[in-house]
Length: 95
Image 1 (cartoon, rainbow, N blue to C red):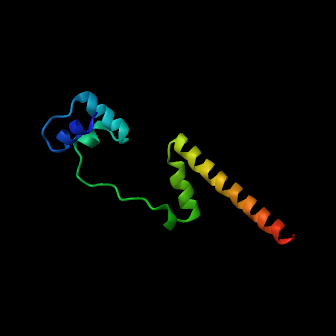
Image 2 (image 1 turned 180 degrees about the vertical axis):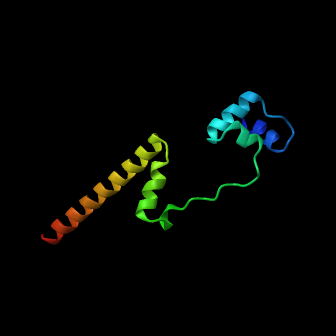
Image 3 (image 1 turned 90 degrees about the vertical axis):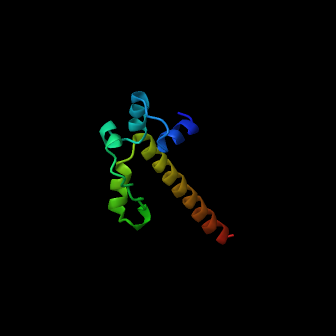
């Protein structure tokens, strides 16, 4: 769906087709009933920094597999970088 069509639907200038409704329900991970009977409440933003480690892991486990793998790859990369920095800092100090 292009931006102008989406904008017209949001403004009530055109109706949503059944096909578009199904695609939107998949995109937003909602049922078509949830979209049709939307109560206007927008979910609050999740900020992971203010959570305990256990809660952070629980939230990460709710993600789709590809997203989880991306997060774990980022963490692995950061940990590897830290080990290299620590290693070089220690060995440069001994020179």
